[in-house]
Amino acid sequence: MIDRGTKSEIESEGFDLGGTLHAVEHTAIAAMPLFALCDRGDMGGLSHTCFPDFGLPAIFLYDGYEGGVGLAKRALEIGTEWLTATLGIIEECPCTGGCPSCVQDAQCGNRNEPLDKEGAKYLLRRWLAE
Image 1 (tube, one colour):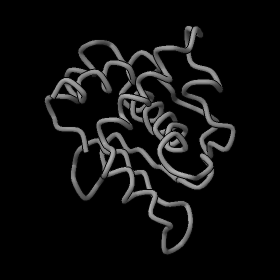
Image 2 (spheres, rainbow, N blue to C red; image 1 turned 180 degrees about the vertical axis):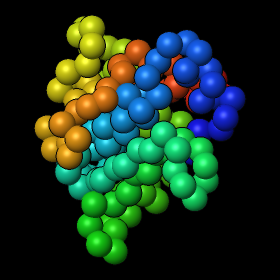
Image 3 (tube, rainbow, N blue to C red; image 1 turned 90 degrees about the vertical axis):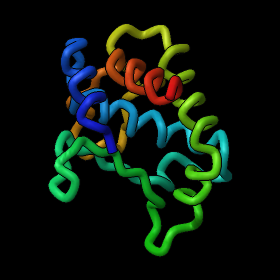
Image 4 (cartoon, rainbow, N blue to C red; image 1 turned 45 degrees about the vertical axis):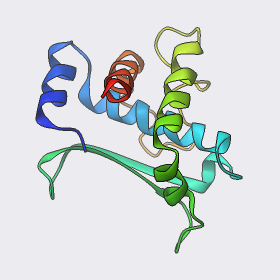
C-alpha cells in the first residue's frame, strides 16, 4: 500500500502513478528467482492506483499457484534485499523507457501499459530510504 504522501510525491514529480506501480510490480516479480527456487511465472501481481478497500494505491504480489508454494512468505522474509535487487535491475538496464530486461513482462495482461521506469526507481529509492 502506498500512503497519500508518497502518492502525492510521485505525482508532483511528474511520474505516472499507475505506470510506476505497474513497473515495480513487474520488476519485483522478475527479481524473486534471485531469492527463491522459482520462475518469474510462479508469482502473480496486480497494482491499483486506488484500491477500493483501502482508498489508496497498492501493489499485490502473490504465489501464482492456488494454495501457494511459499513465495509470498519468502518475499516478506527478504523484503529489503528484494526491493534492493528490484531497484538494481531497473537502474542497471541501459534502456531509457523500459524494456523486457527491466520493467516489461511478456505475460502482462495489460500489454505492459502503463509503465513508468523512472517513477519505479523513484518509489523504490523512497521505500529503501525509510
